[in-house]
Image 1 (cartoon, rainbow, N blue to C red):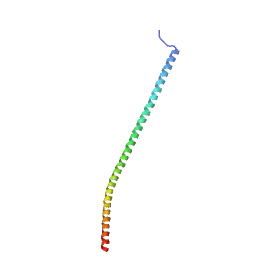
Image 2 (cartoon, rainbow, N blue to C red):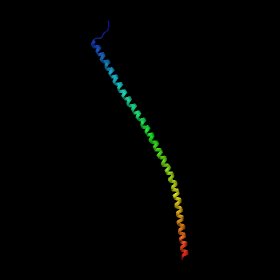
Image 3 (cartoon, one colour):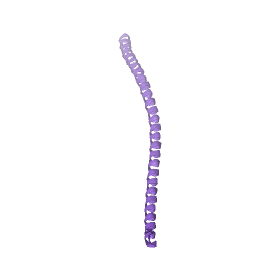
Image 4 (tube, one colour):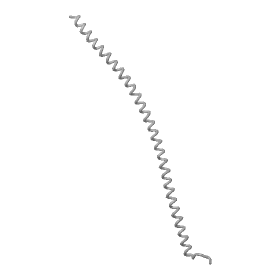
Length: 106
């Protein structure tokens, strides 16, 4: 005896297979969307890391420039201190000369 299903049971089997296929297609579609989002997120992360690296290089250049400027200012400060000391000595000598001149004129 051949087991041929009734048309009603075949229709239910067909509907069940269609339902499973639809569910699998939906699941695959959801997985593809999630994967695409993850790839895009990874791509964006790489872009952000690149931008951060470029900004860091710019900051490094600015820091090196500032360091160079500070070194130059330290040299200028030292020279100004020498000049201030020289001026102070000249003022003291000038005061001594003024005293000697006043003493001579008396």
